[in-house]
Length: 278
Figure 1 (cartoon, rainbow, N blue to C red):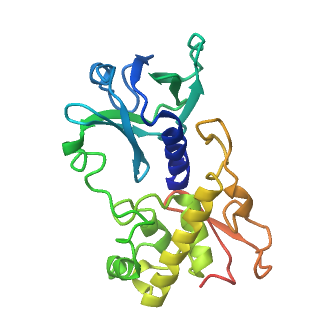
Figure 2 (figure 1 turned 135 degrees about the vertical axis):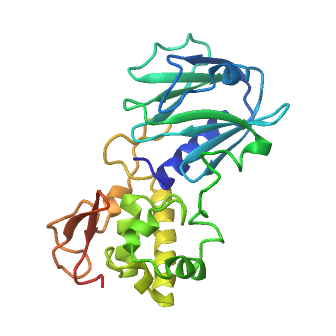
């Protein structure tokens, strides 16, 4: 599933290509993904100019000018991909397999492909964005100032849940998905199964710093491509080359040489070094 670095990479790619362009055409191959799409309202964006491409957690927020300053909300789900093609001077290409909607802005064609159809597309006026059901209960951004050691320490008090699972709780902090939670715990020297309530303030300082470092490194690498994820130009991410523990069960730790272990926690694959992480 695309996580924060992958979605941020897509956001940057969109911003480079469609910012300032006006919607010329919107087409749909179906009326729903994991939930109904507001087909008529999104088609009514024709003539509106894209003013910003933002992100909140794993949601892309494409903003437009005009009455209400509408915002298109896009979620990639498990297998969703957004491609942008230059269609200047040529007819629009045929629909790809599993392509569900497309939007032409100027000479750029934005195409949404999603084999599993777990993604989402919605529309809301800017004034109602913060209270939208998909966004209202989200925790702070891990790269923002609200997510610091004191915040994490406070949220862990009295919690018996494993710290890795807590880091993946979007009500606590957004975007730290399975890969990045395992990698953050390794970098912080914290075993992923440790009860969150047993973390010290020093542990929380290390975890916050580790999560920021891992996410920033992944964004610079264009995200992590293990299966479906590619950027808007169909380019793969490269952070998988830097993974210290994730997907490396049975291999030696790159720091101490101990054998990387693997278990399923909360129905998600979890990896750690038994010597580096306590």
